[in-house]
Length: 335
Ligand code: DC
Image (cartoon, rainbow, N blue to C red; front, side, top):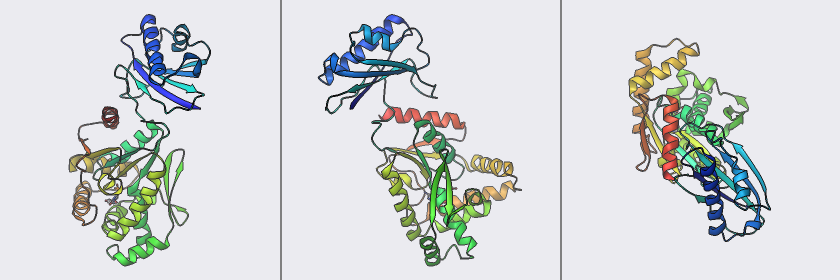
């Protein structure tokens, strides 16, 4: 079964406009793919929730698509999504290479539902990248890989073993002998070291700087990047980290670099840690974040930096919703 996809937007939510738009969309799908109307097996429509006046399925019948089964549904609202948009999937019992049709400003967010695409979100601590990456992955229905959690897990194991985080050989020996895993529970990443769920422990403040220290060792980075590529090549992912767009996936389909002033980033971390019950000195936390930035930006291999082709977003004065909407609309523009 081959699927042709398409979408169009309408000028207003009126019966005649919906009928016109549906006919135009189906006729174009038909002519651009060299199809007869009776070769359509099923047509499935979904439209944004601001369309009420007429069922696209009914409009399709009236446009002459008589012999196939038809279905219309309403989509949930998506922040930053297109308004007054009708999407369609046409199922065919014909072996063609489909040409998807997008009219009147409608765009596809996923270039092809069957293809793998990756979104790289890099940035310093507290820039909001993990939260944005998690929300984006949720909305797109793809995996979120928090690569910082992997360095944190390595650091935790090194600390637990009483080894010096600056001793590259000892750190790599531990990394090679330990089993580091990420698993997903209800779409949320859990991090395991030798079978133990360390998702909470890796967030403890003393692990942050240790993670930055182990991550400066070239052999550690190469090991981690290989694991991350293995995951990202198999399935569509949003990956957040420091070097995703520059080193791990230089050909990522979409690249973003989030930043914010050190003051704002320190305040975000402070609020997060205090909410978890930690007693924190704000100035010391801010100094630690600045020191970590310097260490992450200054290392020889794959330092923290904005890829030349990444879109830079300063999140200092934006809410998470606003950043997610900005990322999505930039993605739409690139498709
Ligand atoms: O994003 P985070 O705070 O969880 O990351 C912890 C440390 O791990 C960070 O200071 C540097 C390192 N890291 C890295 O070097 N490369 C990545 N892709 C992710 C994190």
